[in-house]
Figure 1 (cartoon, helix red, strand yellow):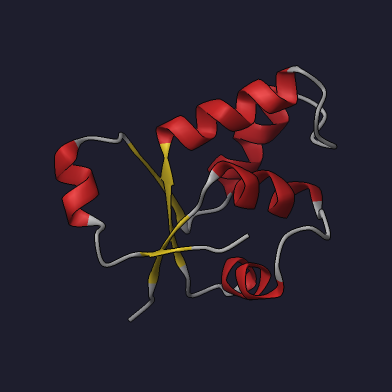
Figure 2 (figure 1 turned 45 degrees about the horizontal axis):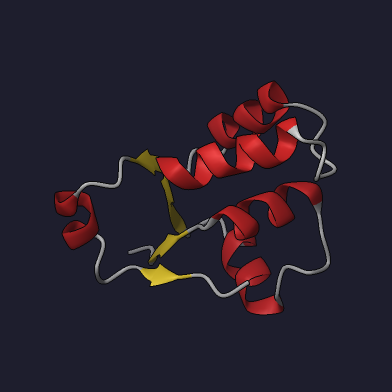
Amino acid sequence: MAHKYVLDTHALVWHLEGNPRLGPQARKVIDDPLSSLVLPVIALAEAAYIVERGRTAIPSVPDLLRSVSADLRISIHPMTWEVFQENLNATVLPV
């Protein structure tokens, strides 16, 4: 069974742009095809904000959304109390 990990904004953006600031442990997890990746919708919104302001190598918000949608290991979750409790045992990736 795949292990579940929570992506934060920086891990997502740095992974998608190939940024060397993404730590080796986080890179290994994100590159693992068996990893289950939980993306809080607020992290996606923050990533879109960063892209809109030109603070990343990701060319546009549609490019960001296409990349996220294309990765079937990523599931986007609202940040509700129930979702938080459900994912308490997930590992938050260190960046």
